[in-house]
Amino acid sequence: MKAVVYYEYGSPDVLQLEEVETPVPADDEVLIKIEAASVNAGDWHILRADPFLVRAVSGLFKPKHRILGTDVSGRVEAVGSNVSRFHIGDEVFGDLSRCGFGAFAEYVSVPEKEALILKPDYMTFEQAAVTALQALRNKGHIESGQNVLINGAS
Image (cartoon, rainbow, N blue to C red; front, side, top):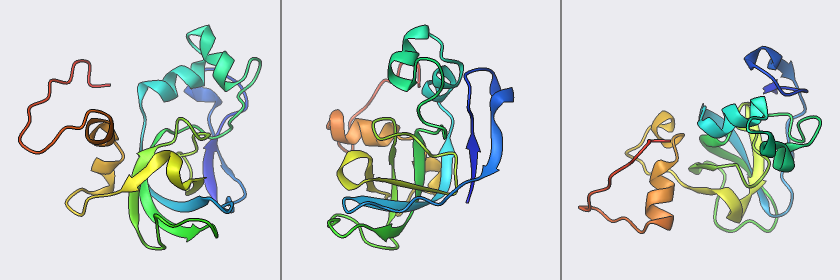
């Protein structure tokens, strides 16, 4: 599969398009064929390792995860033997920041319970790649008809 990878911190000039192995889902993971991904401020900070404390999570001297990308949407391509929430063909979206990133590729394998939810039918893959809806619905318990002020929109 093709992926945008990097081997050192820096500007976008350190990013390279390469052929890498397609991930194989573990027993508790789902393999997602990525349809859309968005770039957010977290990706930018990790790429540059700025602020310096980013290195505490992403690798002190060089990046621990070679493929960036937090916000993702796509279709479930394969499931591990212990996966029960998702099925092949399900359309999903989520935030990969807690499970190794990887949205800037053709496929990503992620833990079933860690990062994904089903994509609503009314949303496009591009709309779903921006995961604010997930945060508002799951963490903020926002319901239809309520008003929300988004300050910063990041």
